[in-house]
Image (cartoon, rainbow, N blue to C red; front, top):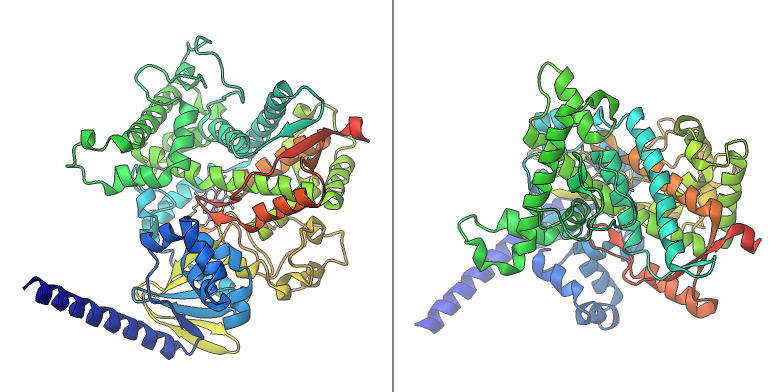
Length: 581
Ligand code: HEM
């Protein structure tokens, strides 16, 4: 009986599998776009297989290249390594058919521009983001008119006052990070074995200050240091304050870096399962509770303060509530948006700085160009960087901005921007014809393709060349776009910067759902690079061909964890400038 039952189930499964696969192949055929079939759907098992050592080894060394690439294409974590290879095989718009879904992969700038800029834009598949709704709906997870309300209420808090705060806090904390490095180095040259911990700490502390109004020093303070006053419990001590399992910085870090287990514990685990039976998720429950308690504490402090005097993001939401007649946020919505800002902004910015430092170390000529640009731009500014005025100095820091843009071109923290057709079929215009994309189809706007195509960037597309962005560089391949109508992209509205073809560069996405924190991130990265490069020349700690090979391997093996990340550490030396010149 068991045998017939098993055989029966197997037959049912096979019939259902074949039916779904056939249905999806027919969808692909009707579109007349190139397509390939992968016999499994993306999901947790393929993602786990790619995390093992042996599976990627088999994919890279045993399978034919095309098959290995097709498999990597369905796993978003490993998609970046493909760069433009799939575009060369299948074209800039092609379909991936699996038994579960049909995916439309897009690396054509014109099609991206249509998707992000048709009236209202194509919808974002918000259900994919529901797991990050750990404290309720927020600007990342909401849709339609709910999203419009969240967006309106959050967009106003990313304002000029907040820009100034980001600038000031980035300078303070980048300097404190350097002081910390100096304190553990006996020579004037600073050897930093890994930036894996310090750079995320830098961006998290900047976010704590400019996002939450909590000014944490870079160095951990003694447990018995001053903990009085309303902000006492936010001190970055070794042990958490009474009633908490984490310090404020530790919980913000935990919630950002362990997002998958936090989601597993607090979103996927049924409420009726006794927490005592899940000791391995204890930290995840505690982190979720502690972050809420900290933000609640911030809200109650803020209500007793003159919130108009403060320009951090939490105060911004409170100020909006105090001054708006209707539609402003509840406490719960402030908590949820506060949390999502950390998730969206922390790792993405940290990874950009880490890649930028390594790319500058690997490309001394480009680094020198960035440094000379900083020197020239700030030659009339006070020697004390704390006295620099954000509104007038930031626009002059063209070369570090070019370095940031170029870093995000080669190593975009978010490799794929997802969209979908929604509940109605839609058309795209591609290669001179209208292509019909059926309802419910998911689209991936693939930065690995867009950012690596010679057509948009020139023959030196694979090189790290911050100079390509500088509008003074008339030989840049991008100079040809100056007269194109409608060329623009979020974060590129500077007259000092060459513009890529619209849709070809989307590290912050584009259109109505483009990144809210792009200016926040740009100011942070530009001034952090400036603080470092003014004082230090960055070099690889391991010299010669071996050191270079190691660094290039670390870059080449990048995979998406929370954001795109290097899989190995590369030690760097920060050589003091006047000592080495
Ligand atoms: C280099 C750093 C950053 C990168 C590369 C980046 C990239 C992106 C991308 C690609 C999206 C679109 C995601 C999608 O539609 O699926 C996005 C959205 C968003 N980002 Fe960023 N981001 C960065 C920094 C920040 C920062 C610092 C903040 C906040 C402080 C932030 C807040 C947001 C928010 C709230 C959204 C959702 C906007 C909406 O759906 O209306 N981001 N970001």
